[in-house]
Length: 416
Image (cartoon, rainbow, N blue to C red):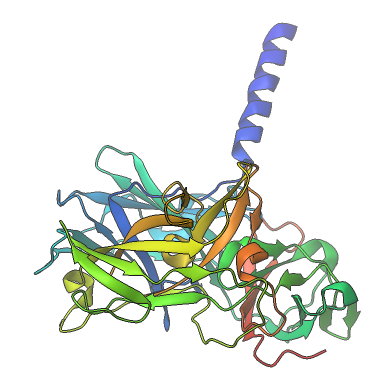
């Protein structure tokens, strides 16, 4: 009997451990490209939308199979462990439904099918705020990819101010996010336990700062004004190219070659870390699909092979250089890894991307996966960056983390 109890206890512990595992996004296979989110007025950025607003996911499958794909929506806690809610508590209707809206490409060298999913739809509506993961499966129930999105309610006001670093050592390299939270409808009980925050730079969850505690309370306001804990490296303005004309050289494109599909060779970039900051307007790592002489860019924009190169001395084997940006959700993959070409003295790689306007930069990553965004581009306090703050709230006895507030600003008017 004692052995049986021990066995059951072990099973329960294992179950709880599995239940509490942090979930990460799954990157798509090679034949799924151009995953974009559209929410409110934003396109292909991190989808943060108000409850009951429409979320739209689009992607291309370039294998030409017109395959069937299905979507599943899961709810998560602040720390991306699965929440304890039943699916019926956060969804009205049901998921695990086939994506029925798709079109085949028209007049393109690269054949592809373009898929479009809107939520809410006739089968699915989301009822609660919080963290969500949208998962796309194929007809064999294999997970193709997953993407995070967040839904918030307007229950609290979030005010942001961007300051230069209060650490004199990094005053020319870092930016600090000060913010305050207030609500006319909620009385924050024990805010250091019930309130959690997420500070995001340029829609990149990989570098987000989470779970800062309020330094002090002023009336009904929670004040967050840290010296170092809420600071980000300033980085540099993103590099960019545009290839909306598939047959002609555009911004950043040096020359073009037609093979199976068009190949666009970008101008060779240089190291910017040792150069003065130069203002160069960007879209903070984002991308936008554009194409000339088309009525519907979603199916008429073509795919091209983009050739990237940077003039950089060969580095040791414990570090690698990658092309980095929101074009693949800031993922570090084998495709983005650059190889040193002894004959040219450049690091080079190529990516197959849909026509459009793209931001990108070069970053260094060591063998432990540690990312250094400024090693090649540099870090400058003048850089214009976008900042977002999400406020999570779980009252005593509540079963999930709701998002009660959202604030956004840029560092364009940074101050001391």
